[in-house]
Length: 277
Length: 282
Image 1 (cartoon, helix red, strand yellow):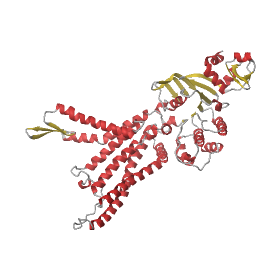
Image 2 (cartoon, rainbow over the protein chains, first blue to last red):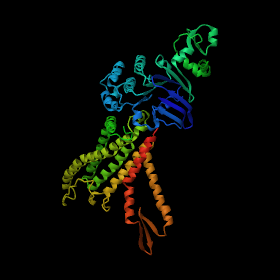
Image 3 (cartoon, chains in turn purple, red):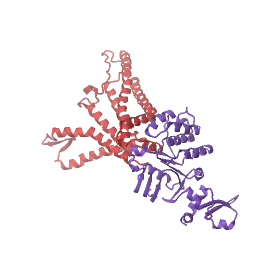
């Protein structure tokens, strides 16, 4: 569905991507994680055809995104971190924009709006930032576009809305769609994503499915000093030491995305070694 | 489905554009009407006489050039604002459809509404100035002369008395042509420049005119015989023993030159705007 090969991109003197390779398949929710300024938004914009590669190639759904052909654009939806919605009512938004997307489902949109508890009568400009964001997310999911990209979607959402967001996103995926969620708030994506992709210094630092991660790594609280010493990553807390260690015994565990992320950022070679073993 | 132009999709683009910009357009038209009303009111009160046709003509063309070029320079403003630009570029329509939509609103609909607004203001204001002018005339020092009310100008008429420069035949047709070329240049500027496109396009046009001035005054002057002057774009005047001689291009070449300087130039600017739109990155 998405194939990025040897992507090079820079903003003037600032190098963002230096030979980035990425391959994404339909049927997954990808969590694109990384520090601020590591190129997450740039990657999403490149996939959407808003930025052009300086070298390398991008193929999305069989299209070259840079050409921004209508058939390509109607199969893709990007919810940017900073977004724009016109000063019109929800009804008018649907009347004027939904028809561009052949697979748009009005019933689905109503359902999401209801689940997000968006008031129907207000114009979009009368809504709060969080409400507007929820409208845009609802619209994005109702387009049933093959590739949906959400850049920091949980920014500006309250705790209840974040939980609604996770529920709605999980229900929106099917085998023909690919959802990419870019964020640095890793906790928000826990129990939602199927694949973790960490981007840092212009390269993919880590890219594994959640299933494989939990097979290879164990996330736990430990009080055993020798276990802490042998861990791939540890940090002390009031409850003991939160550690990431190799899952040698094949124990069933739950992914702690924040801990994994810190482990990768701190020493990704060590984490990678657990997957290469 | 055609990836360059599809009528059904274009209508969707038009609807989307109208819903996005309706308020802005209405406010702009009201502002134009307000400015013309303000200017006419000031003239009537200060001059205490009817609004002459030459002033109507000047107001019309100054307003057309200023508001049209300003409007043209704002057509692609959205592309210079990250969130709005992303939203505009990702609308599932071709660049050609998006450009045609902007041109329909920015050139065609603007021109119709500008004329509508102008006459909606001009007709009552000129009538009012005639009415008041007649009353003031009675008590003025020229009361012994007959009072002549002014007519409403027809800006599309080539009659000389309607134009600011009556000695130039068909001036209004040249002014309209030049307007569409200038507006197209500002539309190109709105895609090309990220910020302050109106100012930057104005500077670019002045730079272009300066370059033309240098070309005629320095380059051509240098290769022409002594005591000769640039006379027009297509002619040169030579003074030989107090007898003036002219070097002229053939008539067909002159006509072709002036034709090419008109609408084809607008087309070139708009074609450049299309390619620039395709290359736009956010």
